[in-house]
Length: 315
Image 1 (cartoon, rainbow, N blue to C red):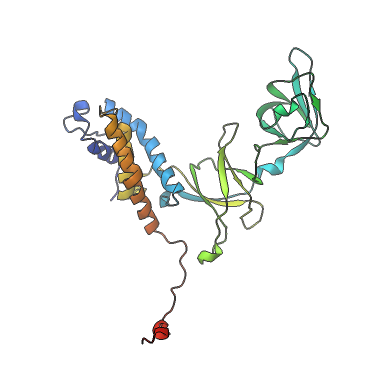
Image 2 (cartoon, rainbow, N blue to C red):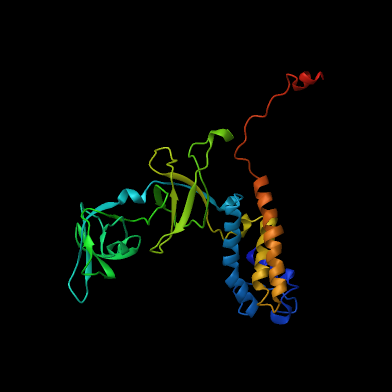
């Protein structure tokens, strides 16, 4: 059986005892496009709640099957790093900072870059680890917009890099995540032969890109067949409610009820109680159901027909 967003919103209202006379005599909504106060709030909160439940299940390694995608990421950002050969500071009053690279930087005006590993004196290192928007001067130089240098800076020649990735810390590789990714489920081997011992998971972390155009995934392993990228499973937002079974619907309704409680005039205790029910009961139940409906590590059943109990003297 499938449940529409209106159904799910009414299940949420039922957990609050209905919306009273704020909608109609039944206390239920009939459309997310209606203009009464409760319908408007249901329409506002439904996408947020839906995405939150999808994300919460994904990070529990129990994603909704209809939200899972796989991708091979093979554009490793650090591979685009270019060595800096010179940094100069212009005259007053602007003190514009110009960066010159050892080779063609392949940037255009409006691109963003991160500068790393710059050495020198008089605090020139303050340029490190910051995302800048640039104005291209020529194929091997650009200026940093809205950045004021210091006339006393002393740059150490051939130190530093121009990168698309932020400072990586202990991570070797950085990749742009797909635009539709809302949560990474796993980074794993691309080849999977059906034996649980042949598939590995790899360490990773995701961070918000400093230019705020999406997220980056960082890892230390190359996991795809070509050896030039990584292979990921990730969750996407999915507004097709026919993909949600009853356990997932209950989790969504419980979390939505928590969000709607103040709108419907309920007190903080009811809001917190529903949120606790979501975290401690509805979400674990949905995760357990999802995990029970898939087996990605199946292998042949052990054959005991040769008489495993013979050691005990039993036949």
